[in-house]
Length: 344
Image (cartoon, rainbow, N blue to C red; front, top):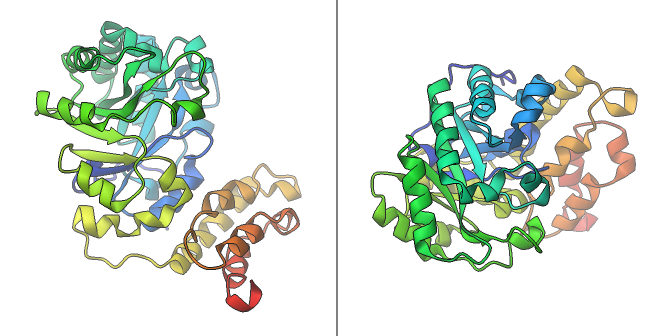
């Protein structure tokens, strides 16, 4: 395994046909490396990184990733074209395959920074941001957004938003099929309460046949993915990919034509152990005064056994504070052994 990032990774076939959404506090580099053990081709996204964090903060901490994560996209949060251009340039220099602009996050913290979902009200500004980033980098610049804001449910609103931004050169739009309610709902409620209107996203693909339209929001099963792919170019999974990651085990064969057999869950865990040892060696275990906790890696694996008998024993072992404090990556195999019926 090569755990260092590089700039020369070739894109995988069929690109963003299937992807995993950027999710704050979840899709960090450890999560993405874990997902990559399950699926080689599914497109992965970072957590949102603000332009301020890059331009005034610790760039390596925010942008460092592992070569094995490719294809991987950097999602940016911001609304100043010059800042976004500079941040996009950093992303390209660090080796990311795509820069994605967040125009869909409804949290108040993001709104206070005048970016995220509220940018849908300012399509010309988004167009300026996209143009600035496209002028700064050679890799793709994409936009992730909702289908409306607050009580604006008119199709014309999202159609005109895409039309305006597309004129600036953006050809890929990742569309969460819900409105964003900017006041009164938490980010979690914004993922559950506004109704899903997939038909709006389907219509966007009909009206913009030359654009890449990717559907996001509430998708949980292979059957749902197959249905959506009859209408759009790609599907982005969110929470289901995190809570039930082994769902992705058949993606490479089904959606990318890769005949290589999928790894078993045991193989996935065994593949993660060298990585965890490497990370603990690089950064030091927090139990020994270093900066990395074993839990920062194992927490992303809790859902690997979803749907199997005794999966609760697996989760309990990987959540045991005393065992985690020992800082031993082999704990993941102990958790697997505890799933045996006699240990339940």
